[in-house]
Length: 197
Image (cartoon, rainbow, N blue to C red):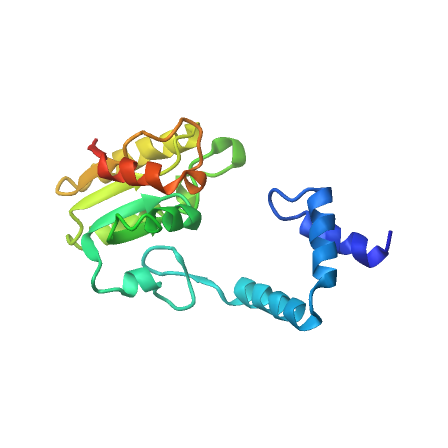
């Protein structure tokens, strides 16, 4: 096999869910594409990786200091939906059922992977609650063991804000499912049937 082809396949396999055979198919497809398209794709990926930032308000991905959601004055600022990752935010946003603000934790508490509460953006969330503008926090994180651990930790931290109602999305989502991969209808029902903790 060509050393160049082997190198491209090895690099593609670094992506989640891409095995050797899929990497080979992708590499062969890239080889058939116009050189300008491949150059544009490579430049977009490099620019994305080097220029993307995290929103200073919600930790979402952004081109600027504030993401488009935080900049949108039409959104309900009295409600914050707390999610694990940006992919979860996108899944909820795609339902069209939620019009408040978001907060991206950046993961869940996982002692086995060395991720503790201080590794997440929980302090940034608490800083937002100090303004008194937020009336409800919706916790919408995965129902895995780590997600449940994070949920209980957040509930205890948010007790410091007695005027803020804390809810969680309804548990129509199977235990162990990753929120990012749940269909939009299930997420819609979970949001509409959330309960107070």
